[in-house]
Structure formats: C-alpha cells, structure tokens
Image (cartoon, rainbow over all chains, first blue to last red):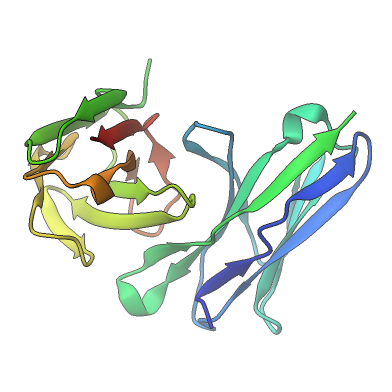
Length: 111
Length: 112
C-alpha cells in the first residue's frame, strides 16, 4: 500500500457543481496534513492545512478522519479557475517528519 | 517580492555536461528542499537542509550534490547529466520540517 494515495482522476465537473475527493494515508502516527494545488507547468501552492476539527476557507472545506485514515477536500460552487491538480500531503513521523506527497487528483471544471 | 526564487527557469543541455541550479529564499525559513517532478508528475523529495545541515538525503545518484552556503540558499549541482535527469526541479522552503512548504517556480531541465 502506498503511503499516500489519491484517485488520479481526471474529475470532469460542470461549473457551479460541488466536488469532493479523498486522500488515504497509511501511517496512523501522521500528524500534519495539507492540500496543495498545482496548475499546469507551475509550482505547487498551499491551498489549506487540514485540522483535526475540520476547517473551511471560502468555498473549500477540508476534513480529517483519523479512524479511517483519510482526508477530504470539498469544493463548492466550482469555478473554471479551480481546474488544477490537487495534491495531498501528509507528514511521516517515522521518517524525520518528512512530508509525503500523493500523486495528485486532476480536476477539470467545464463551462 | 519573490519568496523562493530559483534560476534558471529553463535549462537545456547535452548528456555528460555539469550544471547547477540556484535557489534563494527570503522568508527567513530554517529548512530548504530540492524536489524532482518527472513526466508522470510525481513529486519526489531529493534533499532537505535545516540550518545548512543535511537532514534528508533520499536515494539520489551521487552525481547530484546539494550545497547550502547559508540557510537562505540551497544550490543543486549535477554532474555528468543523463537523459533520465530531464524533469522539473523545484526548490522549496519551510519554517520547520513539519510546516507547509513554499515552492520556487521550478527549473525545467531537458537533457539531450
């Protein structure tokens, strides 16, 4: 099992719809979780950290489920500009807190 | 103000050559990284430095040698370039090893 797994997609979603994707992690001792977005031919940029209680930033909601070892990202009222690859990142306490990256989920918002 | 800057943005070179990529961050972060993203888009860590000390060194050929003259700079030197080295190399920095990363805009290396 990979340390961090994501559905690669692509998710083709009409503009205005709500879309959600998950990321599973294998190390139960992981403590820090992040969502990044990466546009084509650009660098990854931090979208949001994921807190135990869940957190929201505008149209974006991130949640953590420790029991099932996954984090989720929900995007409401999707915009064309949300088209990107979303990368899940988890820290690995057993490896000097090194951040482990998922391969990303590609999202395409269609007009 | 660019937080993490790396140069050059594009690098096209022939097999066997030696090249360097430079990275500087003005965020006052203690930790810097080099990542490689290949054609399949997997982002893999290569090296990590904390206050100029190497703390992560993944399975990377000896041809790759990072150098950190101070905690704001982390350069990457590559000897005897091979076709398989073609990728995008990202520099990044963070406040600590468990903090979010801030990336440079990448160096697209093409080895011919």
